[in-house]
Amino acid sequence: MQRSNLKITKEFPSLVVLLMVLTCMLSPVSAQESSVTSLDVDVQKYEPYPAEIGQYVDVWIKVENYRSGQSDDVSIKLVPEYPLSLDSENNAIKNIGILSPGSASVQEYRLYVDENAKPGTATFDVYYRSDSDSSWLKNTFEMKVGSTTFESRGTLELEEVKAYPGVFSPSDTGMISFTLTNSATQNTITFEGKDYDTNARIQSASLSGSSILVTSGVQEAGIIGPGNSATLTFNIEAPEDTPDGTYYLDLSVIGNSHAYNNNWRVPITVDSSALKMIPSKPMTLVNGEGKIQFDVANLHPNTLSSVSIRPEAEGVKFSPAEYFVGTMKPDELFTIEFTAVVADEKTLTPLTLTADYRNGFNEHSISEEIGSFEITEENNGSGATTAATAFGLVIVAGSSLLVYRKKKQDKIQD
Image (tube, rainbow, N blue to C red; front, side, top):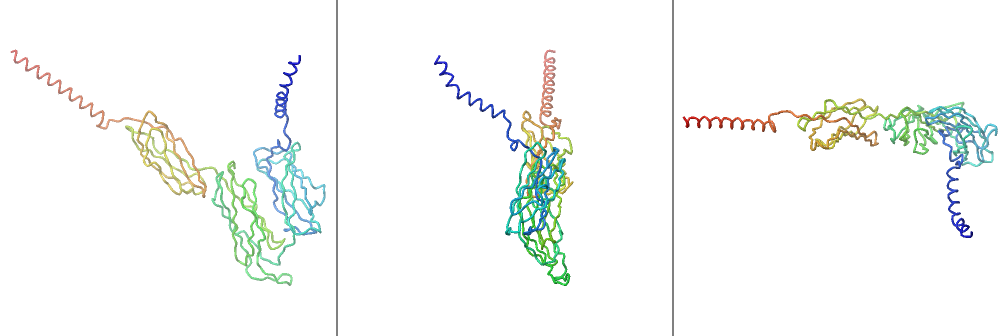
C-alpha cells in the first residue's frame, strides 16, 4: 500500500506542471494583450502655442482607421496631468462611432493651464478603443507651456513642396521639403498706430502622418526677413504594406505669435507599379542559337534610374550577361536584345528576366518568367546534312565501280 502512495507522490509534481501548462493555454489572455486595434491617435495641433499660463488651450485630437477592417464603436478619452485640467470632466470621453477603413475623425478638447504653472512641458494621455468591448489603449503627448510671443507681422506662405522620390513605392524612404516665404514687401508696418517689423519667425515646425511615417523631429528655422524664404526638410517612409493611393501629411508651423500659426495638408502618392518586360518576337533558337528580343516599359509614374536587365535560364548562355538601360521616364519603352546559345538542352528551363532599378535612392528588384524557348533544326548546308550528302556520293561512286568491274569481267569471258 505504501508503495502505491509513494508512486503517486513522485508523479504528482509532473501532473501539476502539466495542468498549469494546459491552464495557461486554455485561459484567455488579458484584454490589453488580446485587443487588436486598427486605430492611430495623434495630436493634430493645439492653440495657442505655447499654451499660456492661467488660460485655456484648445487641443485637436485626430483618430484614424488605417487598416482594412471597420471599427464599429470608436471612443477616445483625454486624461491630463498637472498643470493641465479639463474644462469639464464630463467632456473627457468622446464617442465617435463608426470609422470606415482609411477614414479619420478630429475631436476638440479644451484644457486649462493652472495659474501657478511654470514654463516648460506638460503632458496628457489619450486613451482610445475600437469598440465598447475592447480595452483602452493609451498614447502620451506633450504640450509646451509658456508665454513666448513676438511683436512681428510677417506672414508665412507655403511656396513649394518637393518630395524625393516624387512618387513612393511601398517600403521606400525619402525626403519631403517645404519652402516657406515671408510675403511681406517692406521692413516695417504700422498697425493701429503702432510700428511693427515684418520679420516672420518659425518657432517650431512639425510634420505628422499616420499611414506615412515621419522619422524627423521638430525643426526651428528662426527669423525669415521680408521676401526671403527658408526650406524645411523631413525624412519620411512608406511602410512595405502601404496600399496604392494618396496620403496626407500635416505640416504645422508655429509662427510669430498665436495669430501667425499655420497648418497645411500635404499629399504624398504611393504607387507599387514598376517595370514590365514583354517579348517582342518569338523566342526561337535555331540549331541551338538565336537572338531574343523584348520590350521594357516603365509603368511607374516616377522616373526610375540605374535600370538593368539580366536574362536567366538553365542550360543557356547569354550575351551580354546583363543589359544596362539607365534612366527611364514614366511610360518610356526600350527594346533590348540578347544572344542565346544552348549549352545543355537536357537542363533547359524557361527564361526569367530580372530587372534592378532605383526609385529615388531606394533599390528595387523584380523578376518575371517570360516563357519557354522554341528549339528548331534547319538544313543550312553544313553539319549532319553535308555529311549525309557526302555519304550518298560515296555510295553512288561505289555502285559505279561495281558496275564497271562487272562489265570488265564479262568481256574477258567472251
